[in-house]
Length: 163
Image (cartoon, rainbow, N blue to C red; front, side, top):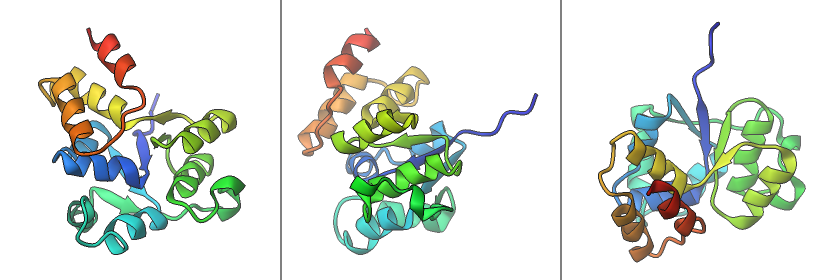
């Protein structure tokens, strides 16, 4: 039985957070296919020029391991998130162009749950990386992320579950 490689659709916040701690490349190491919608690209690379993540994401797209993909059916973007990267990320999963959404903001997480969209957090990406030996110390990595102003809503659970 052939299984389709896992494709993740990533919102701006996880891209920026991972770039801040120089761990953006973990996405390529963990997932066979990484996509971002045009709004996320614009938020991070164009409007975010000179800020954390802009150069790393631009380079990842140029290198081809992150692909910019528009939702096949824009009507699938949830109305509360119209015009946002999170909305386009969710639409990519709803349209079958991605299997999992990587989102951190509460409103997006709640909509994913409501719509039956599989989702993971930046923290879970790091936990998966730790379980595969791609990072040595999950707690230290999560702390580095927090020190750079990135909130991790599931921090306590990630640490508890990694023990």
